[in-house]
Length: 91
View 1 (cartoon, rainbow, N blue to C red):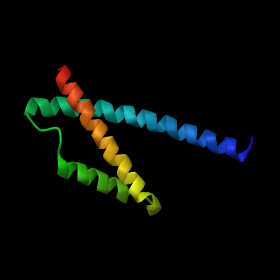
View 2: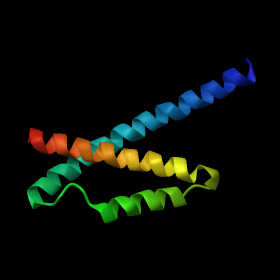
View 3: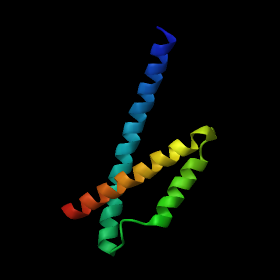
């Protein structure tokens, strides 16, 4: 097996973990949506989202990826809001 093939296997394992974590996160987003709907809380909380992005970017040990991680988490928050909106509309 070539080094390239070995690295692809590692990436595939990481991707599988990411998919599982993504699904877990989205399921929790639906629970949060139900709670927010019941308590009449807005879906978008700018301060909370900024905090989530900042805290996760700060977890990086290799800060050359800071800008990319920031984009990643901002997009993840956007998807989370969309899931919450869809869930609230369905209940």
